[in-house]
Image (cartoon, rainbow over all chains, first blue to last red; front, side, top):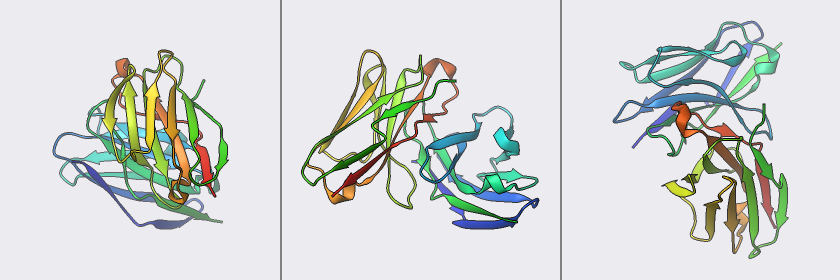
Amino acid sequence: AQSVTQLGSHVSVSEGALVLLRCNYSSSVPPYLFWYVQYPNQGLQLLLKYTSAATLVKGINGFEAEFKKSETSFHLTKPSAHMSDAAEYFCAVTLEYGNKLVFGAGTILRVKS
Amino acid sequence: AAGVIQSPRHLIKEKRETATLKCYPIPRHDTVYWYQQGPGQDPQFLISFYEKMQSDKGSIPDRFSAQQFSDYHSELNMSSLELGDSALYFCASSLYKAFTYEQYFGPGTRLTVT
């Protein structure tokens, strides 16, 4: 079975500061990992994905994540936060095509001006 | 680009009533997934279909059923509605031949049971 742990249910950063959202996974086989963003009362938008190719993955809106097998981590970063980045971010894992995505509990990112 | 379409976007039902949620996947996508998201919670997987066959099943109540049709759209049928069924219901779709495993989500249907 697979699982995802997101450390920190709320993260607050100043505009222009580094964003770091943490995600650790547990899986008995090589996982496929994703980050999604959700704005209030909206659907989930795919930010980026790791599917066993490059370990450093670049996504939309300047976000990137690095897959570290030794640490079972897939942390999301962005060099400079923008006010529009304020949202809830979910890390998710799946093991097989057509099967469920298992989500972490989510991290709400607040960006202060 | 075309996205996943869900209808209706909002639905209000009374306890013990039935509800049908519809999902139209991205064109040419052959796999659909259903998730339930309660207030302040992460999405919970309900069920998925690939080429009209069930491919995975999560914690879907027996009162719920779903199917995928020949045009790949899917419907989630919910009977004997309970207050606890109030949630956002998301449909997602993907394409098997893409071999990339990501799922694309629709805007959701907000179900309120009173």
